Amino acid sequence: MAKPQKQFFYENNWKVFRLEALKTGFIKSFKMVSSETDTLGRFNIILLTEYKDSAQYNAREENFGQIMKRISPNGSILLNSLKPREFSKIVFSKKWFIEFEN
Image 1: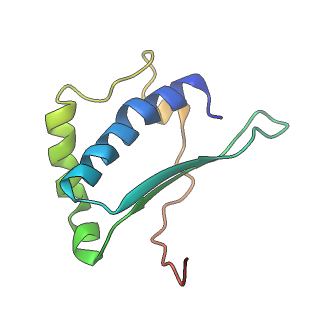
Image 2 (image 1 turned 180 degrees about the vertical axis):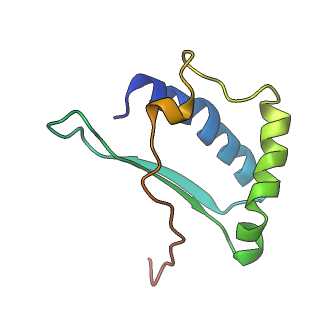
Image 3 (image 1 turned 180 degrees about the horizontal axis):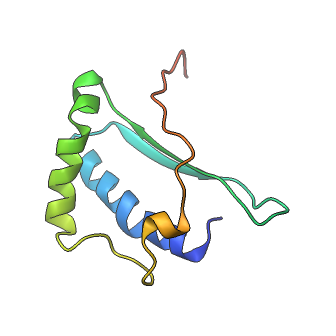
């Protein structure tokens, strides 16, 4: 489970934007996966957004920009005064390919 400000941020921003993107057909699916905290108090969160094709993927910035302006025109909803980059760190970003699934 994420720390309170991360959990709050992802539930009130990332998830909300993806629910709207799903409803409008901009994405195929999304998931947030987290691991247990390690012995140093660190943990990992993986945020996955699935697009139905490359056209959706290539339009992601424009599409999410529209959603964010409509839903949260004054910026992200935060738990406290900390900005996302102050309480989280992007370790890497990847484009994944599903080889098979059931």
